Image (cartoon, rainbow, N blue to C red; front, side, top):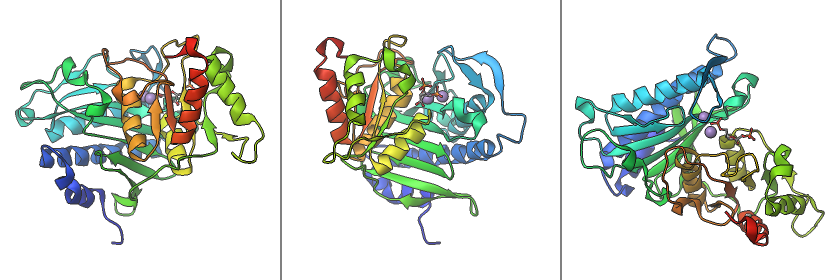
Length: 337
Ligand code: AHG
Ligand code: MN
Ligand code: MN
């Protein structure tokens, strides 16, 4: 075999982990297993009855598709069976899921996740993803509590995403760089395909739902116009690319360079994306790859978290592009977030 498998890589790198090395390795392995199962279902989403809406809504009042529920169930089952987590928080569950079992009584970690990101793309054969974030528990024993999740993003032990795209990739960081693994379907293993991923300091892609333009803060409106201006030196106009699956948009921008913005809007005055299981893990990865992630004025990873499903605006991507967008925001100080 030419390339290292995810399992081999995790074991090789576990000496880097500051704490509970074997446990974290097993936890990452469990996430890899759930990812393969979800990938199998995503791949046949067009074939089976699993596709479609359940008719239920999640806490954000959005439509929940069946594959969201399936992905949620798979990740919860894999995490419970692995015995390394004492609680799970998910976009699909209003409350945390405390884990109480014989095998998890010494569990040291909690996991927060968005089991299926980009769910509006499920039934149109466009990439979707999973986002996960791992923290050490702060409670001492027993099943985990809400408090275990009320930690700043800087406290993350590891974070990653899986993108169910033209190929399936798992990208993760433990705070020592970012590594990407592509699923080789012929052997059913994630293989190291993108070692030490670095995002360009500058790109020429901007990703934002421009349909909301009229509702954006003035700084964002002006930044979009800046992206569209002609300028040879900075290679403008930039290209606009927006899939509507944050994982896929941010993954592409990580590789080619670019900025993804989900700002506040008049309809969503706190932004749309969730801090705990969308923005913090994505911010950790992008910073580890040399990029930046902010609210438009503050570093995402240093935000205080008070609620499980707390929302925040997000400006993430190539460092120089995020800096420039923040300058536009700062010039409109009344709208600072
Ligand atoms: P989810 O499918 O988990 O609700 O998240 C979707 C997120 C993000 O991935 C995407 O970029 C954004 O919401 C799309 O929102 P709009 O349709 O409002 O642009
Ligand atoms: Mn999401
Ligand atoms: Mn989701």
